Amino acid sequence: MLDAIVDQAVAEHPQAQFRRPGWTDLRGPWGFAFDDEDRGIQEGWPGRTDVFAREILVPFPPESQASGIQERGYHPVVWYRRVFELPTAERTPRLHLTFGAVDYEAQVWINGHFAGRHEGGHTPFTLDITAWLSPGTEQVIVVRAHDDPLDLTQPRGKQYWELEPAEIWYHRTTGIWQPVWLEPLGEAFVDSVRWTADPDRFAVGMRLRVGGRAAKATHLRLRLSLRRQPLVEDIYALDGALLDREVVLPRRMHRVSAVCWAPHHPHLIDASMELLAADGSVLDQVESYFGLRRIEAVDGRLLLNGAPLFLRLVLSQNYWPQSHLAPPSDEAIQREVELVKELGFNGVRIHQKVEDPRFLYWCDRLGVLVWGEAANAFQFDERAAERLCREWTEAVRRDFNHPCIITWVPLNESWGVPDLEHDPAQRAYVRALYHLTKTLDTTRPVIGNDGWQNAVGDIFGVHDYAMDAVKLTERYGSAEALRRTFEAIRPAHNRLLVDGQTFEQQPVVVSEFGGLSIKPGAGENWHGYATTNDAQELLVLYEALVGALLDSTGIAGFCYTQLTDTEQETNGLLTAARKPKLDIPTIRAINSRPAKSVPSEILDAIFQHEVERRRKSRTEE
Image (cartoon, rainbow, N blue to C red; front, side):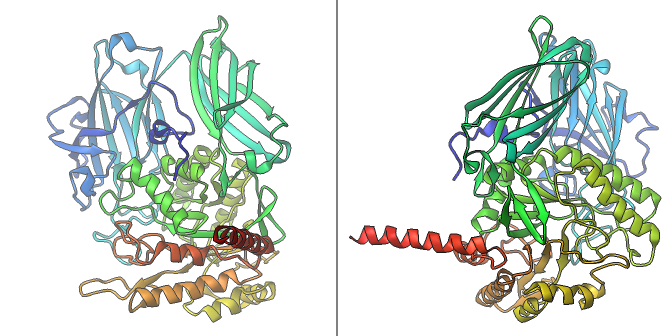
């Protein structure tokens, strides 16, 4: 299925978009302790060994089976301890320690010295730990994670605040749940790089920041390649810590499909950067990549690289029964993305989770579109607003370079803004999140609040679990139907527009629908959005609902709920073990039918049918 040139080492790197040689993976066994009385700091746990009597397998949360702990009660404070070896011969001027994600607040000590803290359960942080390394080879990392299970101002997504999961809420994920790694660095290093694609001009903007002693670096060598064929090699002089350049690709690559990124041809341009000292020595080396693509919302339609795009998304909780929010393996991440493609979807809506970058890598590589979404809080006050704004800013910055991400969704169904209809502060907050996101990223559409009570947005996402295909056609079948719907329909008793907001021909995506499940058996308690008696009945209803939206001339796409069963929420096309409930080729055929709102899909289908007919005719001759 995959191109032979895919480098598995790249896929397994915790940050494929920004990777260095010589990194050290700290996944594996760590010492572990619960601290339910929160006495660890007072009792000096950062400098002790006796309290870490248990062992946990990082990066799996202690609530999960994969961690080796599997205790799902309320444990707001947990501690970790890890010893690593640093051979004297391999010492470099700097050593950075990175955590992919720690839910929710992390404090870190190195050899008993406090090294730093981070707040935000879904975003990474990096610490320069050089100053606290000991003269010997053995070094000690201690982490304290605080995750209050009852604090509803904390961005938590689908993690339930009650003791046991219920309805659409799941078991919690506390502490470390994404990879941890070390990177040796020189005195000056590449701190960040941002790629801004311009497919019309076959160009890319590069904004690169130098960290450390920036004056030590005098030049940057850049090499770009496509399918391992060189495109560009250049050297830029540095004047300070910031380098802004536009790089134009060779014009000989005149075919868009040969170089641009799209689901049916997900070309990635590899970038190698070397930071050079005055004597030509290499201070730092970073590998990255980008996709040459543009996404736009224009006149009620979505355009990808200037061509009409119809979204066939599936809602993905990306939750695993044995490991919760943490993916169980690199192979499981890859397979999850492959299943999305095999089912005939062209994208996923990651739901209430900032996904692991390894998942986004495979979406980039295989051509799966992504709506990037925040994990929301469930109460509104100034602290909740501050927390989400900070974490969302970090998420957008982390994932800006992924070509697969085509839309940002900071809020879902007014979660965290329960009085959006009447509270001016909450309406201002939604609009502020929208404008904050547009400030951080002008290249992608943003939905202020997906589902209903739209206060601001470049796309209008509507959640509608009507189980009658005729109703879906009446509501979304045409532009005129959409106008009536925005005036009269109230999903979950909520208006689609808040006061003062008007429908101005933004693209409309039915961003949640379906939620079909087979009638639960004895002892199962999922109420479902709608249940069917058996798999055949499920297939018939699925085809009718999807068909109604594909026949619409007014919408720009849909998102079916959902990809997999998740705990008691058994409305997936796949089981929690990722086994299909229905025949995959049949589902793919249903999803792949041409959308009437994109006439070019119909023409493409006619053309492909004729090509296939002629091929068969020649074979028979």
